[in-house]
Amino acid sequence: METKVYVILVLIVLCGASPQVFGSALQGGSQPDAGDSSQLAGADSCTEPGGVCPPVDSNDGNNQDEPKGIFAYVSFLHDINAQLQTFLHLAKDQSIQLLRDELNRLQRDTKAEIQQLRSEMASKDQRTQAEIQQLKTEMAARNERIQQQQDDIEQLTGEGVAKNQKIQALEQRNYIERCESGVLNTPYKALATGSGTRYRDLTATFSKPFRTTPVVTIGIRHLDINQRINTRITTEVRSKSPTTMTVRLQTWTNSVVYSAGIYWMACA
Image 1 (cartoon, rainbow, N blue to C red):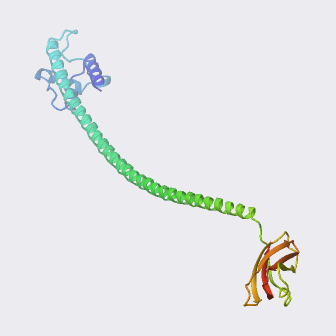
Image 2 (cartoon, rainbow, N blue to C red):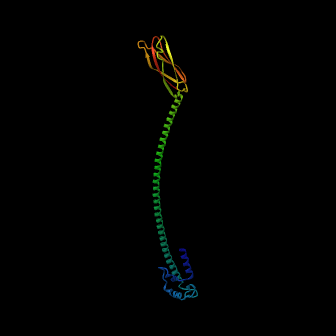
Image 3 (tube, one colour):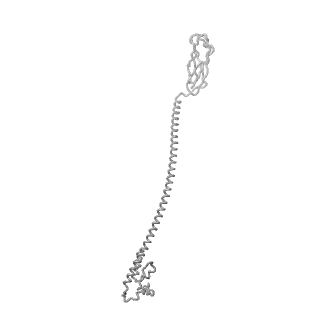
C-alpha cells in the first residue's frame, strides 16, 4: 500500500497538479501560499482534461515562482509521508493486536482442548485400570477354580488307581460264587460196639455242582456217648469234588459213640 501511495504522489508532481487540490482530502496537509491563489483560481476555471492547466502568469516557460512551488511540493510530500507512516504504524499496531488477540484466543482454546483431552484420558485411564483390576480378579478366581479342579482330578485319579488295584487284587483271588451247608448224621449205634479203631464215612451231595472244587469246613454238631468211658473222636474231609464231599468220623479203643452229627459248609 505504501508503494502505491508514493507512485500516486510522483504522478501528481510530474503532471504539475497543485497540492492544494488534494489538501482538503488529507488531514493536516500543507496550505498553499498566497502567491498561488491566482493559480488556484485559474484551476477552478480550467477546462483542460484532468483539471491541470499551466499557470496564468507563465512567460514562455520561465516562471519566477517555480523554486517556491517545488519547496511547497516537497513539504507537502513530507507531510503526506509522515501521515502515511503514522497510518501504517497504526494499521500495523492494530494488525499486531488482532494477531495477538487471535493468538491468545487460540492458546485459550488449545488449553481448554488439552485440558478436556487430559480429563478424558484420565477418565479413560481410570476405566481401563478398573477393567484391568476386574479382569485380574476374575482371572485369579478362575485360576483358583482351575487349581481346585486339578486337585479334584488328581484326587479322583488316585482313588481310581486305588480302586483298580483293589479290583485287580479281587480278580486275582479265588472267586466265591456261592456257599452251601448241611448236616451229616451217623446211624444210631454205628460206632457203639467193638474195640480198636473204628470209623464211618458220611457223603453229602451238593444241590447243584460248583464251578470248581469247593472249600469245605466241618464241625461236630452233636455227640451221644457213654459218659463212663473216655470220649475219643476225630473228623476229617476224606474227599471233595464240585458235586460231592465225604467226611470220616473215627473213634478208637473202647470208646462208645451212640450217634454223632457233623456240620459242613462248602464254598466255591
